[in-house]
Length: 354
Image 1 (cartoon, helix red, strand yellow):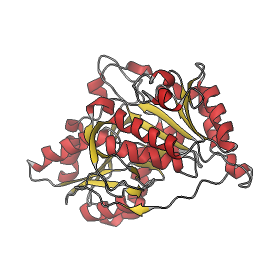
Image 2 (cartoon, one colour):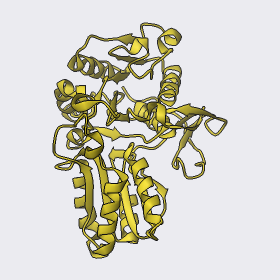
Image 3 (tube, one colour):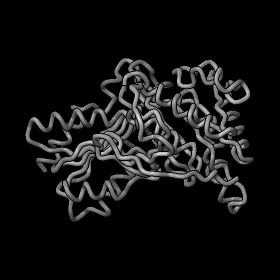
């Protein structure tokens, strides 16, 4: 079924924190302090209120979920619209695809991104290809899949992974990763209303850690639009999710040495904002990409290839990647695995000295 048409107006961004906000209704109104899980809860509440075919389900979501993102929604909307599922990721996503294909708006939760792999076939062979194989006669574009991802300080190898690159290779899916409450709300609402299936990777360490003033109205952040969170002249630093905060710390360290870093939050991995990235790299002549996922075949490799292809004559140094190591995610040695500000800063010094 075709997505419901909606009137869209523009909302002026605040202090460069969340440019590109697209307002629906009264989003230009007041703001309220929220952490990230509260912003996600607020987004789902708005989606449920505006679309009576929207439903939320997954493991333990009726009780609020492991990270409390769906807290209070079952009481507000009833057990027919917010409900628990069996412990079967393949079943959760298969059920969600079926619902979306007949006109519902499923918001499915995978309890941890590490658990998504039993559903991999459903996502890449069914959800991503549904519209193509039916010649647009049928589709499951209203499908949204939320999943907590990334390091949390004590998750070990089965509760810390960042699997976005597995899905970036598959045409037909949107992939978004918020860095904080404003982005979490705006990207989630955009995902729910997108005409394509969308995976929302939520850095779990930020659920309570990230707090900011969030518009309490209905707004979206356009999928495919990056955010320049810090302007600079000498080096472009690119990341997404929690890694953006590490890059900002790196930029502060570099500034103390007279090096000006531009920090870009990609926000959307597929589609990604190629023009914003190239514009920045053409200006600085140097590019460093950082992500928590392992180095080999991480999405940073795609960015690096595109940058050298389009910006080759502007580059002052080879494109660098600072990523997780090619090992399972460790427990005791997590800080040595992550692309910390110091590791990124080492690459900043390397490209400046090249």
